[in-house]
Image (cartoon, rainbow, N blue to C red; front, side):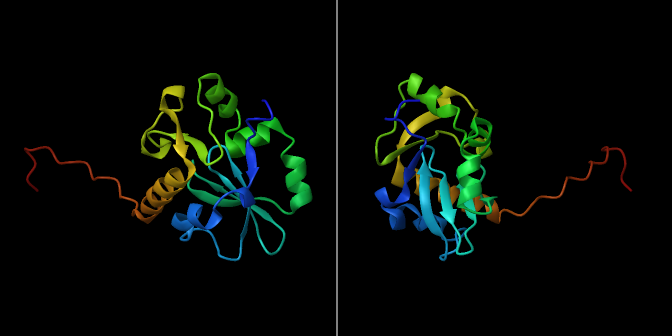
Length: 161
């Protein structure tokens, strides 16, 4: 991967308040944005020193490291980067002409939680602001859905009791 197409960039280089406007429902105000990935995922620092990731793919906000030393050790692992940030998709996207600029990110045309496939034809370069807003709203709505109980089997038409 060339230096031009890095997986992570410093959050300070972006309009953080605008980008996180649709994530207030999930991200505590006390947490500090540190990095943002080429796919729009975020790394945050908590006041206790732990590091957390906001996944735009899964709609989760989870601790990934107890402290910066652990994070700096973990982020050397290709397997860990692939699992947490889908890093293996960045060179695939670039090889297919999808190269996000400064205020852009890679994203899914049809989000995988809505049935979108993990294939190049479902990837697109988006405005970072638009993608953060749309996905933040989508994942909030999905998080509010009540789980539906399984449907009871229907009785055959000839059984009336």
